[in-house]
Every structure is written in structure tokens, then in C-alpha cells.
Image (cartoon, rainbow, N blue to C red; front, side, top):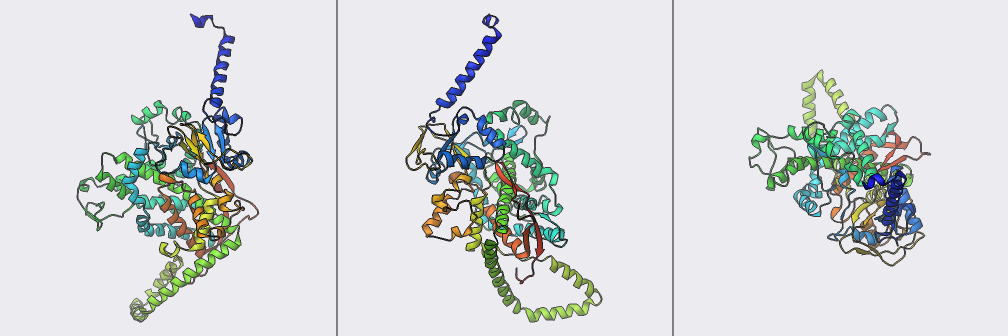
Length: 581
């Protein structure tokens, strides 16, 4: 036999020859060798895997663009782009680009099968159909109906800050508490039930720990997706999960399945109960309409198209809400508070804007209450006469309730505040949640991008052709530092930039804000996140004075797909109240 005649040294030589041919094909055989970038990156994706492994890839990407220009090669078939015009091409509607194999790595497994979501699927037709089926649940007109649910979690959050930290003078790990808040809000909106992070002040069932592990895995393994088929999604693990020999469900999946079982009334599922808009309403055995949370709306979609929106898909939608809507919003909230506390001028200007709204609302409330004052005084006198000795106890209970009253502003009060909007936009610009390029695959026939390959951080004009199959993406961290769009001081947190210049310039900045992605794949949960941010930031600032424990130290950043911050410790003091609410 031939193998018997081959010596070990010859086999080794053949192996190394095959490796050399492979890496040379990687470098020269993909049609992008004209694009500059790190030498080793052109041979193997292990280079970018290593960069992500070190947990600060966003910094590396910024420096690469500064050195090589607006388009940089970071893998055999992968380039990153930092050009706003090219970004509009890549993420435009119907441009032909599809998501890369990075995204399926993020699919959760249940019963041996990946749970497809709008975020993780690479099938554009599937994505479009699913988005049409559930998009109404994410519309801002729908989201604002959830405001009372957000307020419920906000009140619990403020109460915990007051009781645990402000009243006791204790140091607060605000970064961790903001994640507790974000998780419980999205739990309330999705299932009409908080997971318990805020109420218990701890990581419930290790859910956050599990999510952090998953993100660490996804960030690294996603750079070489074939590894996922060897690890979490190998055929043996999937078979064992499908046949019940192992439980690959995450704690969030378990919570979702339990909550879906608790709110399922199969005996009444065929009862045609509709609200005033003609939409189905989930009905309990006694036919009492239930809260219109995301779960109930996903079940509406199931009833309309049960073949497409099956139980597994409803489960996938709710789980995706939890994973995508908690960490990212917490990161954005941290960015707002942290940068405000490090810039007293910006904080002072925002406080002036918020206080003016609070005082106006207080005056409006006083006018309304004034018309009822005489009636209330009469009722109060009658109640005091009847209560007798019990009056002292009731007064004490009243005082306790008043102590738990917090100043709050409605969405309608804050959504158009110019400086608050500028602060939020600037926080999203300076510290976007996603820290890796949003990868897409160049369509059949290739594409010519409207940016050249000049070096030295320029790139200038010109165009660059990418062959079909090239993996291309933009990082928000790099795009948000485009000085031609955002000004020369792109590294500074300066909300005023969003209020200066012409309306055309401000519109250009808004259009180039990449914190929620762009095009058809813009984050479907964008409105949820903005509602939380616009509600919580005023609530915290109007009720507490905050200061950094160590203003001389910066926080720690860990980029595992999402750029999470730790070490954000503050002291809190409750403010005096103007009134209102």
C-alpha cells in the first residue's frame, strides 16, 4: 500500500506543505489582498479570534483604522469599514447583504434544536416574515402602553437605592443595580412579572452569570464559527438534548417556559375575546382580560399563523427579549450616569432642564388639587373624628407611604427634552453597547464600496471592490469617531454637539448613530431601550444626588460582544422634593 511506503518525515512534509498552500490561498485567493491590514490577519482568522480573546477589540479596531484607513483587512475573507457612506450601502434595505455565520453561534438550544430569532437568523426571508408577524409589539405606540409596568419596576428600584444605600450612607455598585433594573423591566414587559433582581438585590438563579458566560463564548467562538459545531452545537450534544438525556436550557429559558405555563389557559384558548382594536386578549378561566405584555402579543401572532409562530417560536421570541434587552440597556444606562457624573457642567444643565419640568408638573398638579381642596378637607375631618385613637397609627402608615413616594416624569414629559436627548445620544455615541463589527456577507457579483483604501487614518475618496462572499462589517465604536460627522473632539463626551450647527448637520449625526444598527436589521428592541433610559435617568437624578466614590479612577471595560462596564461605585443622598409626580 502507498501509506506503507511513506515515511513519517515525508508525511510531516506533506502536512506542512498542505498548511502552506492553505494559508497562501487564504491570503491571495479571496480577492481582497489589495486591502491593507495586519500581516498575520490575512492568513488566518485566528488573529481576530485572539484580538477578541483579549477583550478590547473595539480599541484595536479604532487603532487599525487610524493606521490603515477606512477599510481594513482583519481576516482572510473579512474586512472592517469605518465610513458612514459605505455603512449606508452595507446595511441598506434590499442591498443583498446577509448576516454572517457569527450570528447563529448565538442561538439558544431547546430540545436539541436552535431557537431562531430575528437577531440570530441569517435567512432574510425568514427574518422579514417574523418581523412582520411581531413588529407591532415593538412599535413605539405599543411600547408606551407599557409605561405603567416600567414605572412599577422603577419605583421598586428607587426604593432599594434609598433603603439600602442613601439611608445608610453605603457605597452602591450602581453598574450592577442598573443591570438588575434592566432585567426586571424586560421581564415585566415580556411576562408581566419581574424576575426578582431588584426586589432581592442579587443575581437570581445565576442568570446574569450565565449570560456573561454565553457572551464570552459567542464573542470568541463567533470569530471562527466552525468551532461552535465542535462545542455547544456538536451533534452529540444536540442529540442528547433532543432525547432528554441532558438539559441545555439556560436559566432564562427555564423561567420563560415556567411563565408561559403559568399564563396558559388551554381550555379558553379558542374563545374569541377581542379588545377595542380587534386584537385577541388572553383570557383566564373566569374570562378576565390579562395584561397586554409581549407574551400575550406573541400569542396573538401564534393564533393568526400557528404553523409559522409555533410554541417554540413564541419561546424563542420571549427569550430573545430577555437576552438582547437587558445587557445592552444596562450598558447604555451606565454610560449616561457615568459620563454625567464625570462632567458636572453637563449634569448641571440636565438637572436644570429636568427640574423645570418637575416644577411645571407640580404647579399643574396643585391647580388640579386646588379645585378639590375643600371637599378633601371635609372628608379628612370626618375621617379623623371616626378614627379616634387609631388615627395615630394611620398617620404613621401615611408617613411611611409618603416616604416611598418618588418624583417621576411621564414619557410624554421627557421624550422631547432637547438636552436629555442630547445626553442620551452622546452616551450612545461614546459608548455603544455592541463592541464588534455587525458582519454581513457581500452579495453575488460583489460590491463596490464608496470608500478608498488610503492609509494613515484617511482613506480619502475613491472606491473599493469586494468580491462576493467577503465578510464585511462596521463597528459602532469606529463609526462614532468619524470626525467629518461628529466633529474634531470625537473622544470627548459633549452633549452640546447634538444641539449645535445646522439642522442638516444634526440630522446627519442622527443618521450616522449606529448604536442600534441600521437598515432592515435595526434592533427591534430600540424603542424599549429608549423608553427605559428616558424614564429612569430623570427618575434617579430628580430623587438622588450622586457622586463617584473614586472620581480619580476610571471604570473597567470588558468587551465580550457587548462592552460591559464594572467598577461603577457611587454614593447617594435623597433630594428634597418640590412635589408633583
